[in-house]
Length: 220
Image 1 (cartoon, one colour):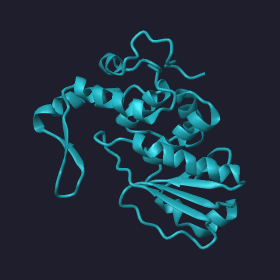
Image 2 (cartoon, helix red, strand yellow):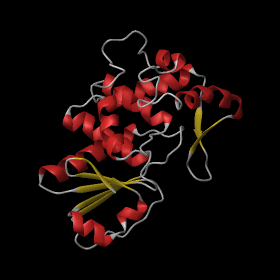
Image 3 (spheres, rainbow, N blue to C red):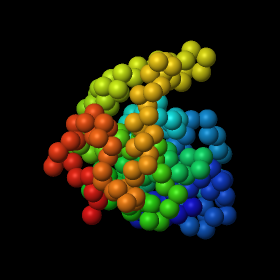
Image 4 (cartoon, helix red, strand yellow):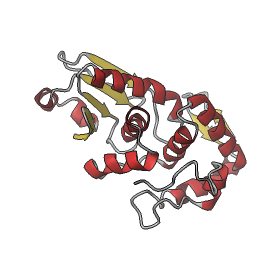
């Protein structure tokens, strides 16, 4: 578990149930960023919230951002300390922390990414989450507008998602699997790599960021 931002701690499922450590650092709030993750918060935890968020390129983080950021912001403003966790503390919970740093602390996406990753090196939001957070910034934290553009982005790759009635999870048809290759290639171009800031051309076009100066691609 790491304090990645002032009064904001990031960790795994293990951290969320380590009562000794939670009490030792003064955690007052816990935000669980993960569907199917069930914990029993210690009695000294004032508030515990769960975001039903899965960690695949088919899932959207945007519908959970406002609730998560508001929970974190409220905890910090009342003088508390919040632990944000998922299963491993690598993708889902860092994504929510990055969104918080962007909206509440005024950072760009890459500034927020670098800040969190510097303290917790394993930070690695999945490709779809990264793209959505870039759109979250591009649309000045308007989740509806960012979500609409994310939908258009998927459409531009010919990706049509539907819900699997067996478990309610989104999936794609086999015929469109090849279109996801661009997302996997984008995974090789992260803000800490040699190619920092150079998003794959196809994804950049789909996000409407090609040649844009309104959306800085390199963090300061």
